[in-house]
Image 1: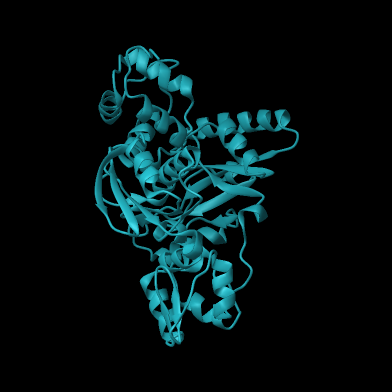
Image 2: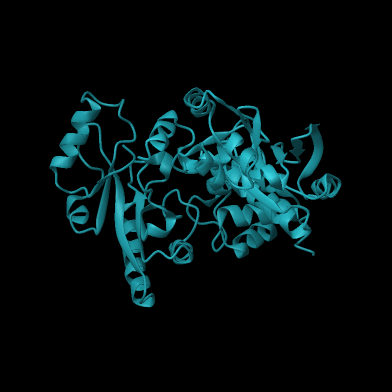
Amino acid sequence: MNLYGFTDYDALFDLIEYTKIRVSLFFKLIREYGLKNIDDLYHVCKKKLPKRDGVITSNIDSHIGRALDLLIYPKGEIILPVARFYANKIEEYLLEKGVVNDIVLTKGLVRGEPTLDTIDILVSTSSIYKLKEAISSFYLFKRYEKEDKNCISFRSTRDHVFNIYVANKSYFGNASFYLSFSKKAKDLLERRFSNYEFAYDKIVKDKSEYKFENEESLFKFLDIQFIPHDLRWDSESVEKAISFSIPELIEMKDIKGDLHLHTFFSDGEGYIEDAIQEAKSLKYSYIAITEHSKSQKTGNGISVEDWLLEADLVEMLNKMYKDFFVFIGLEVDILHDGGLDFPYELLKNMDIVLLALHHPEYGKLDPNEKIAYAMRSEIGSILAHP
């Protein structure tokens, strides 16, 4: 492939997939700025790209720069979306190579912890040799870090550490169970079941060993309610599982829409049409576009003029999509005196208004007073990220 002399295809394609920014925009950037590699793209984004008609719009340079910081040039911990992005990459690759029989996310990755030190995956395989051979050929592989009988650890070219835990199919459920609980939850589990010994590859009770191919069988053996992975960070969930009192959780299939979305009009990473297509792929029936209001400088707050333009665009899109609806609104800043950062006449006619206090430390009023004052305006529909 000859893309105007650009060479870092893997990094570019990952960036496109992660940000969901249009491919054509990156091609224009490469051509117009003479970019030869991902480092060139990083440097021009960090220096703020000069706006050129048809190439750069809104705050796209900072969006790309931020994604590069997270995806290609990480410093310290890995945020959950990036960890899941790369975990999906290695999962798809190992399954395609046919070197694993079972594969699941594990540890903090499956618990949904917001930041992680490593990317952890559990697999079963018929051949450790073929698994290692495949890992060595993974497009991000840099070097092996360590290896023992249960784990193969490697560092990627982007400086992320992957831990590939290996379990025999006969005790895959044991390993998944053992790795997926936080230390706090695991400690309580061991206290509540003090006559059991929990190990990576077995449970021991009265000198007998029990191995399970899946977690469901293991939970039945313990005679406790199955604990969803999202709840395994909390010891309280262990208590509730013992008393069979974990409530039914809302799942992705139950969610019909998203009422808090940003686009390139403020600090989002896509167009409204992109949000619609992504929402439709999730089987949503509606979304709400709620850009940051004008005083939110770090969020590239939208001006009144641009909001009116966006409202017209949403009206047009609603005529185009008969089976989907886009609400138009705003994430409006609560100001230091409890007032709202947008004209009242516009706010009162919006489909949805999110009230947001981004800087509670500013001004003389107590943060709770600011929120209460703003809510008394009867403008807001939702209090954003309280």
